[in-house]
Figure 1 (cartoon, one colour):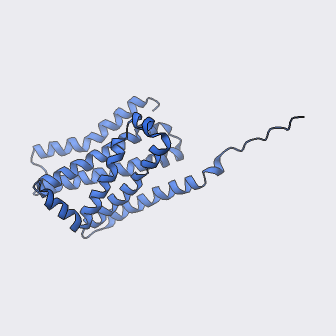
Figure 2 (figure 1 turned 45 degrees about the vertical axis):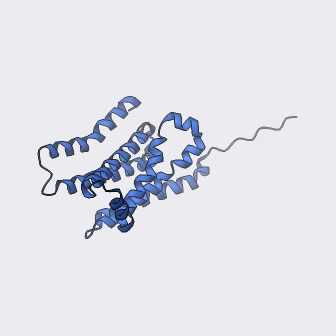
Figure 3 (figure 1 turned 180 degrees about the vertical axis):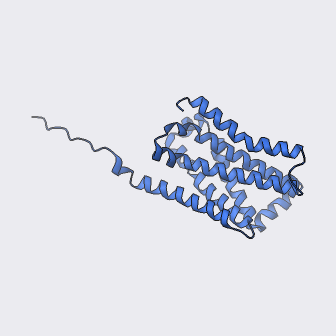
Length: 207
């Protein structure tokens, strides 16, 4: 898939499918006995999945050589942020009745809410600086350092999911293990990157 525009279109359409299905089921009153809770869980899960997909792009690209994946990494990150924002809006409107003081109190009182809010706030500067102009304005080095916040955001999101689940923690633990594997791969890949650099052939001494 060498066509970057086509790859982005494919990712956009598939990324919008969960939201479209959720909206359709909601319009048909098919979200179960507690539709708000179902929608909250679905949007939160989508945010976490897209965050993991964003982190998986570089390892998969390095392992497979599919360099075209770099074209969709930013888009996946923005979808993660979008689903996270919808998750927060639904929580704020229906669970907290748009009461700011109650929302702040809930964030400080309940651990899983605190970690969820932390994850979304960490994604905010990444979304705001996701444009090419931001890279030019900040400089590539500073931009890359800033966007390392995605790792902390993913850790906070996985922790949010773990504390949210009350009984069966197998799925949250699976996400935590996946996140750990992705972070370890990136750490080792960066640590031993110098071993893969071609050695420079010394120039012959001039007479």
